[in-house]
Length: 120
Image 1 (cartoon, rainbow, N blue to C red):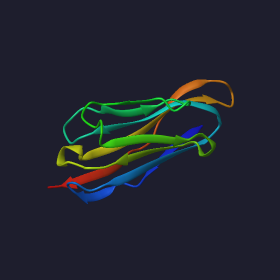
Image 2: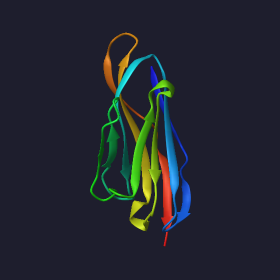
Image 3: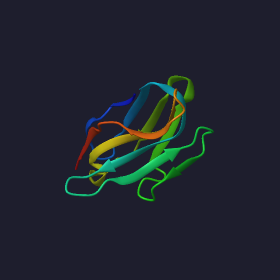
Image 4: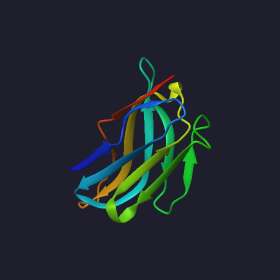
């Protein structure tokens, strides 16, 4: 019923920047919090950043000051601007959205993930 599609990943050198986007579509009435998580090879998925519908943000300590999360409610899209990238930022990045569907069900929807590789 709800699909999230990420874009913008790729390979970048340490110190570089990337901007991820994630757009939600489907039977959406409203989206509450949106956010980003990541999973490094052999590691568990971890929190990166979230943003409320009103624009309040929260970040993992490891990305504070380097990453910025933002959203466009009219486009059902969340962004992650990543600067000063480090090799330890390498992983698959997943978008998550807390959605109220057109049928007024609440669910957590995830994207399929997009790869970010930071070379040293």
